[in-house]
Image 1 (cartoon, rainbow, N blue to C red):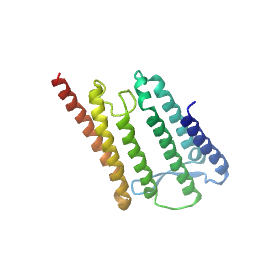
Image 2: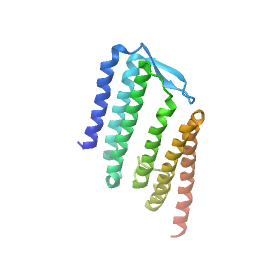
Image 3: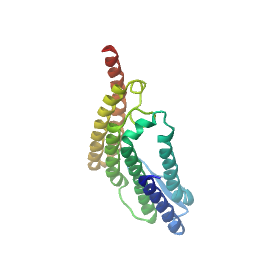
Image 4: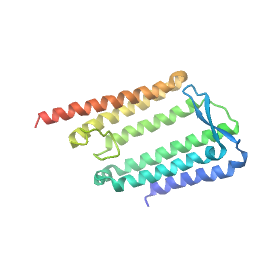
Length: 213
């Protein structure tokens, strides 16, 4: 087992230990969701409020561990495996971070959940940019379109561009901390634009490569 996988399992185990230790102190119905203005709009039973996030983290861990083994292009994943492992670690830390603040809230602490999450989203999306930039053609990780999957050159150019755009997205998200009422749009709009732009870019890049043959 890789060192990064052991570290992630420790994070998940700590989540379950925290959940078990605080279970008696938690309310029967726990806050579980906030709307785009940071207002509570969802509740869940105590059991799932405490253990759902650790369970999701574990399922995601199993999924991420499986991907490099089942991908038909798994040899390409090995070329950027350290960045993929770093992403798994970062995502699990992100979920753990969210889990802790959910617990704090249900303990009675009050804070602006949007401002708490924005720095975490910034780091996550910036690292996604790094991962995408370093990725090689595969079926699970990176910007996958019919045109990137058909050409290594198109893949490399599209994902290099997409990686830079995701890094910029991370910075834009951070700006949202100063505009809390509109922070949601600082996240969703750049991601939507990057997604659409890279798909279109991959198509035209593929056509250009084809015409040059």
